[in-house]
Length: 629
Image 1 (cartoon, one colour):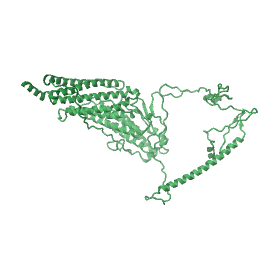
Image 2: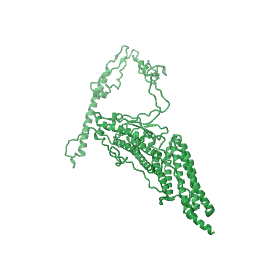
Image 3: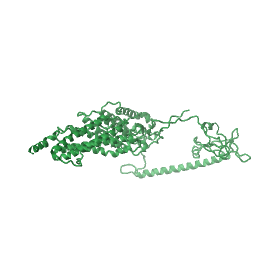
Image 4: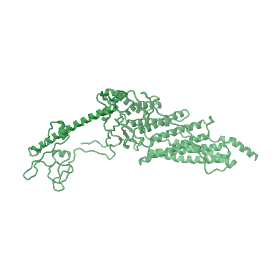
């Protein structure tokens, strides 16, 4: 008995220090999207030509050239397929273009502001300016005089128009060589009278004069004009050569025995249509007093199930798209970088920066204001942005847990309880993303697309880090003393069960990603197998000690996880007031950053009311062909 007590004391002090190593933390990061956020190039000089005032081209030429060059450079840096630049260079190119783009948020300027009135100064205020009452009274008097003069002109025009119409009725109508009456357009002597009477305008038809009457009391001459689609009776011949070319006019019998006008001739042109989608109708220009809605930008919609391009008509949404592409580049760099001790801090910084950039995207979408649903792409209006913001921080927490596990032996402040708190925080972060990620699965096609892909990843990571948290709690219980051995075994059994469920969730994640993006399934499954093997080895050693020495009862339920702990936050993305886009300055969504090229002359050169109608919305892959002869 004495030997057993001495051996038990020795095991309690030293044996648990030689437990198997802890399970590794997975290095698999979520790819940002199945396809990169790409765009088509824009020539601002050509796109904004209809909105530039006459004789103001020279004042705006440097700005338009700078915008075109900056956007071209930014797109080249943001394209993941051809960029090898550093993250700092990509961010600087994006900042330079965003600073230039901010100027479109300002209101349009009047090129010739009204001169100040030099009226009476009797009502001057204390600051020497005329009071508001004098200005209002003077304006009202002028408006009353103009209204009276306009009413008098309208009455004179109506009187002249009535006299001309009465005179035209009394004249005998002229006839052509077939005896048909010829319509005569009355020529108004006064242009204002002609405008009031509706004559003298080439867009309006002349009044049809009365037809001559024959002896039998019937009208003699041409037939009544044929109407498209009419089929009632009455006399009526064909519509002549014009009817044959346009497909309108007479032909065919009516319902009551007359010659109908409903038959149409086939046209010589036909449109070859394909059975797929068509372009949307032309969108009316948006006039809100700013310069935001003068041209269109085409970006790939990452939330679309078909991966189609989308045409935007707002420069704020253009800012959001550029920021989205920048965040995607940062996430892809973090995913592609081999994770080791030297690169961990760099990957950690990229993940925090991408979260801050995505937060600016959400702010920009909110600042753009309400817009028709068809004018906003799916990746900017559903839960994809909010999911990626939180997912970037959760993946940055991966780096925290991994570095803590690596430095645990050297740093005595890092304990199993601290690791359990970090793993619990990571699992709760993934769990909190599920409501927003479910919004991606609302569409029919998205249930098997991006939505299912994101949901499967969130559940896999949540189960994985819950298993890691219970494993850390079980290790702490087992090493704290023999009296806690039973509780530690139950925690380790719970961790093993969670790792088994995480393996099933990872298989579903790999299946959901199979048709969207490449995922290294071998690395994912091998990492889970390593975790399962590590927990199994720990359990075998703990069960052997308990069954031979301590005989502690294993409870039915595991311990509660410790409270989550994390001080992780996103790095705020900021713009520089200079043209180079350096650090510092105003925030992306706080105040408007003024570029030196945005002068008062540049603002006055734009006339947003002249903006052409834009075809906003989704761009289908197949459209109607042009009419062919």
